[in-house]
Length: 223
Image (cartoon, rainbow, N blue to C red; front, top):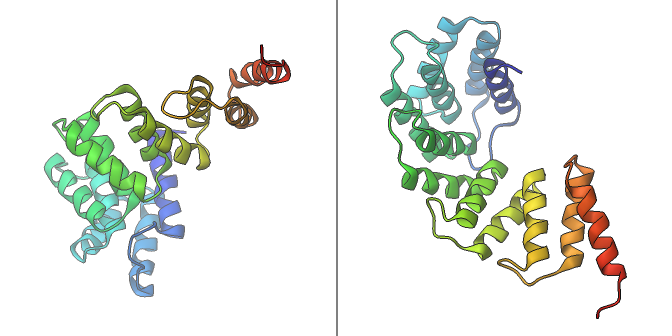
């Protein structure tokens, strides 16, 4: 899937489902947002931009987010990274979890023209608490590696578990490994086996061998 089509699929999902913690839209405003998304889907970038701008001025977080992304992708005349950052920040403060995650990623990757890892992790934390699986994985990884946040295996386990429950395969495998090693959590081979099995069932290529290994270890009587 191309980046633009991936963006479009996210926008259409937002149009249909909204976002946790973001305020519900009035029917008339929802209709305007839907029309803007349809214009974007049809490649009509100018009317889409105008509609997003109008809605953004009325503090609609989804419109602020969409307009920010158009600036980041150079889909508007005189794209403005500073304005993109301001719009993402407004949308994030407005409760749009997608914007909270996007702002964190943009700050981490310097997509807004500068890198601010400390602020990025603050927004990852907000998005993680609000249920973003990608943010939960990011926070868990930061605590696991001590990258941008204090190294804390117990917090890494917590956030990997949340991401794993949300369906992230990598988090399932990492959580299983931490249970197997007793890293940040009491060693528990049965829970390790459970999460390796979940990773295997969801397509992780290394996990089936770990399931077999733990089955053999669990079947052997303790020395």
